[in-house]
Amino acid sequence: MDDVTTIGVGGERPYDVLVGRDLLDELPRLLDGAARAAILYAPPLRAHADAIAARVADAGIAPLAIDVPDAEAGKSIDVAAHCWDQLGAAGFTRTDAVVGVGGGAVTDLAGFVAACWLRGVRWVPVSTSLLGMVDAAVGGKTGVNTAAGKNLVGAFHPPAGVLCDLAMLDTLPPVDLVAGLAEVVKCGFIADPAILDLIEAKGADEGSIRELVERAVRVKADVVGADLREGGLREVLNYGHTLAHAIEKVEGYSWRHGHAVSVGLVYAAALGRLAGRLDDATAARHRAVLEALGLPTAYPGRAWPDLLATMRVDKKARGSRLRFVVLDGLAKPSILDGPDDELLRAAYEEVAA
Ligand SMILES: NC(=O)c1ccc[n+]([C@@H]2O[C@H](COP(=O)([O-])OP(=O)(O)OC[C@H]3O[C@@H](n4cnc5c(N)ncnc54)[C@H](O)[C@@H]3O)[C@@H](O)[C@H]2O)c1
Ligand SMILES: O=C(O)C(=O)C[C@@H](O)[C@H](O)[C@H](O)COP(=O)(O)O
Ligand SMILES: [Zn+2]
Image 1 (cartoon, rainbow, N blue to C red):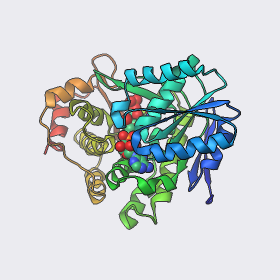
Image 2 (image 1 turned 90 degrees about the vertical axis):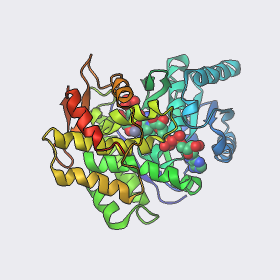
Image 3 (image 1 turned 120 degrees about the vertical axis):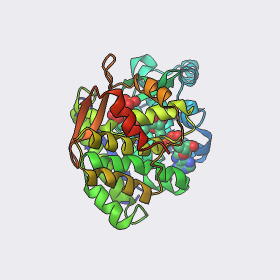
Image 4 (image 1 turned 45 degrees about the vertical axis):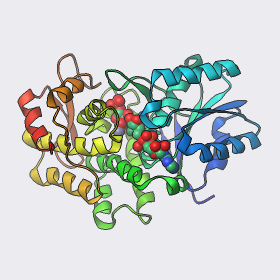
């Protein structure tokens, strides 16, 4: 095992995020005496899931492998119900555990399955994508999509620990690595501008990726440790997501989350600037950093009425009032409450390709 960085997440149920290479030996400890572990994985991660099943079996924990559809296809209540049927058939009790092996989609599903089974059992995400490591696996937001939109059913259910095994990134397709960088850039704008400086100086390659992961995880850990249930502060992590989730939904989840977030960040920056909150240079920096990484900054669709209607079910909305995270300056996130439709549309013109 390589050197491991441990980042603590505080709050009512504290846990650690471990970042390093070849971390699987840590998993049995995190499962803390569980007799059995259901291992949820999608087909592209079968080899990693097999290795994990063998590792927990060596530690005396009986594995139950459950394969689920890949990516957003797995984030459905039907797939969750299939997993609960498997747990039921195997007689899983509160001393058993769930392990999610995959990107953010599978770990969101696995956490949700664990949150609901017997009203909450221990779970551990073994995050295999960059986006999962820096964001989805940390913070205890779990859930699935519904016909009305993204992540509309779910639960706050913190994991027992998180494994960010950087060796897993060796098999991640480059397009998914780049998509994950959108959430890293988000962390740079809302809280840690050193992330932006690092990307601008060195890009995001083998020389910088570990520092980027650790910095982004620290941003997230600080926020969710202080506000697990999104009473206020946690909304900053939704920067760029109001439009992003609408794009994902109207595109039938054919867009990667990270790509939609990239466009959503440029949109949120435009909104902040047009609302008189954000300076021109910081707004322009969004597009420059994201484009330098190869991320999309424009949306070629033209379905503004559909997007607007979908944004109305965003979780930050209050009644008919939309609320957006914007920046008052670099690392100064705040809320834009109830912007009028003309302002929303004017900002959209800046990302409509
Ligand atoms: N819970 C949260 O706080 C939170 C935060 C951010 C994003 N999310 C959710 O995370 C999801 C996006 O996560 P994602 O970008 O990881 O997408 P994803 O889970 O769909 O994974 C992208 C693709 O990469 C593949 N993959 C993952 N790791 C691999 C590896 N090591 N080798 C080979 N292939 C690999 C997957 O099988 C999939 O095909 C979205 O559903 C989003 O809503 C949740
Ligand atoms: O952890 C959070 O809080 C976030 O907002 C992080 C986002 O990157 C993530 O995509 C999250 O799933 C969005 O949450 P939602 O509550 O808007 O569904
Ligand atoms: Zn996100």
